Image 1 (cartoon, rainbow, N blue to C red):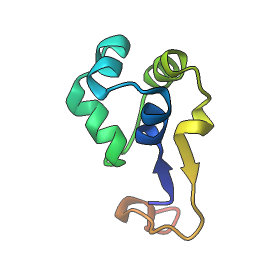
Image 2: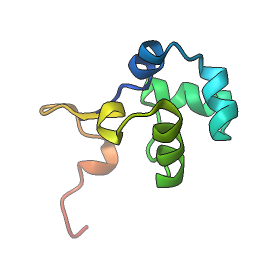
Image 3: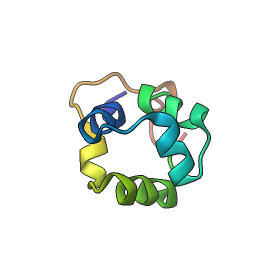
Length: 81
């Protein structure tokens, strides 16, 4: 996928553990793990906002667009189909 999630980097910079973030934001540790690995297809703005508030960062600190990344199968169908 062309979008890279840098949540693990931000957690390391802030010296915060995944379980602490999960409790503070109100999501499961499993969901934090999925976010860190980039294995999610969507994230709610309210969750992103809560993460940014807790980590004192911007969404762009967590999400990065990398040109040339492999598209998902759902993204590869021609428009109009």
